[in-house]
Image 1 (cartoon, rainbow, N blue to C red):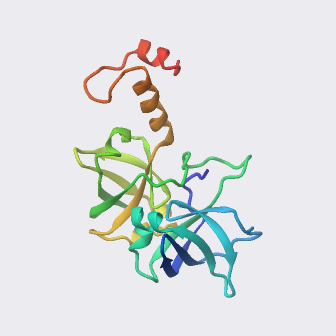
Image 2 (spheres, helix red, strand yellow):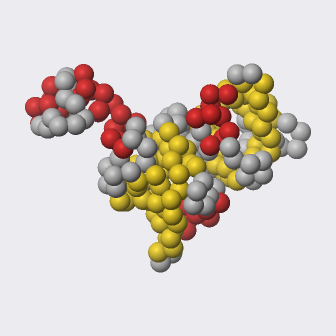
Length: 217
């Protein structure tokens, strides 16, 4: 489990694939301490297992071909800037939101505008993630916890404040680039519970009794 608060950016230094799996190597801009083989690290939002720390400070991960296919980790060029976050420890502050590291889908950066001191990103929203998007709700983009601002029929917008733009890899993305998307975990559970009691995400309305029967009240 992660929070979406990026600990450091890194450079993607290598990617090899052999059959259904491969290796991914990254070099953090700031060194992690007390790393352990087998621990989970979110690499651009995708939860990967650390295999070893290489000479020179590079980190090596085992990665499935399916992971490379379903995230932007399979298409980012070697040398690209990416985000890293170690797993949440019990007792840590939850400053972002609950992030699992399981990427739901990939969205495309449509447009980037500067508004005052913020950058406004317009990102495409594939159909499978749209039901989980709510104004002022949370979404993880390349592992970064962000707040949804505007939601359209096939897109959404977020704002990057100076701290986020300076401390993450998102400013290195450009219109046309793909980014990893993970919807809010709580929204997924609510939707599943409502489906179990017979409420569809289409035409049926949600009432207090519906939520009570689903166990949310």
